[in-house]
Length: 627
Image 1 (cartoon, rainbow, N blue to C red):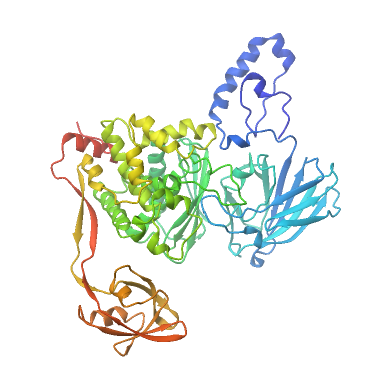
Image 2 (spheres, one colour):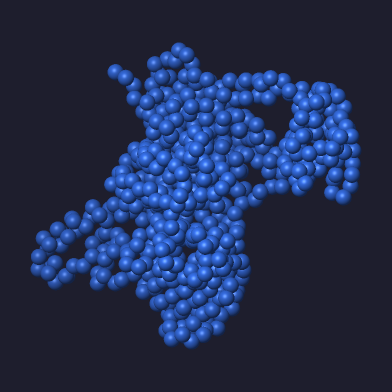
């Protein structure tokens, strides 16, 4: 950080971490009107420059940290990093590698891929160092010396086609100095270009602090690029497969509509440049991880061919883009600035992820990509998923959020997804707020409240802050709603809330079929492996177990391909002898299939809604009523 010759605090203003303003104090004294003019000119810009992490808005005191990333031989899968640490006047410097990535709540221990660690002073002389724990290195030095750390990082995401670089798995930080500016310069093979959410100045990419610095993945290579402008900002869609087949104008239009629909909730975009990084893979399916001014999303190379897979692509785009506000700016207090060495706990991940899932699909409806019946059908599918999750009666949304770092070996049976149930509870909460306020307030207002009162001040909201925001917006007590639907484990009373929008839940029974009550997958040699035994099922009564290999049915060999046909060749209530390989043992069990009618949960619309119900539904979906 440069010394600007005066403190903005002297004028009651906040100094932006990356900018300096110059004023001649003597001329200001001689001409106080000039000082007033400068302050009046600067004030609007300063007020708009809200901090991301207020705790990091402290002086760097001359400390400067710069990286150089060199890619010499991509097929070695090695990044070579040089980390220059200047301005620390102590006899030791400790650098550390994150153990996890924000947004992905799993300990990864990225230090395991660090190799060839070295340290030297500014004159190139080696310095003594020691590794003090699994992810931290302590370098001894004379107090006045600067330090250069060099190390390599192994990454399978670095190939001869591209570098898919993730900040937390690549860049170390200086303990006690996460708040100072960090910059990076890339030395890459000829023809490769760098795409990232960080601001580029000269040949370096800049961030005000480490938390912002590593929250910007980079694609480095030659890619397919789409671009559009909206809301006064530039948007870049970077696809890792240069010859990816798609209708580029359609993709640009749909993503732009999503951006506009999200911006309409909050009033403006909080950036001047946003980058969508799409990692194209052979298999279908999308997933993503949100970042401050960018997102990284995986997508199948054939996902632009069918309507269903393209819709899923857009849904993921909308989800990750809404994270721009919810999670990256509007966040629980625990989620930034980050402790990268340990797990961080909050009971509010259902807000960060579940409500984001709710808005992800709602944005598609408001953008006109989903028609209302299609969106209601999508919500019905999500409700059906919640109702078929055995763990819904064993775990609350708060418990699911808190325990995200641990995945039970029995997770299929005893957990609930804070994504899926959080989406449905967000939906019910939105309807309830609208109903109580006669459609004058909504969950949109709650998100704006959190943005104004916490995010725009650079701070996270406390564990009771979301409930407080809801009650402040709605002007009524929501403790009962919270206790039942968020802190409790009981079934959700859908119709209590849906009827307010002229909607209802219907449970439709499917045609009866033979039922064993097990889920299976393909094992080596095309064998049938039991993946999960459903509670209170014929498979459970037959004492089948997860991991069992089903070898034969009634003396006939089973394969993954013929299992369903062999099962359906038998009758309901018939005792079927199964030969099972369990570890090193061969056992025989008797399976008695039952009749089963699967229940499907779906949302229905009232054919004769009241004017109030219709107004609430139309307002919720963003449908303008005809005059």
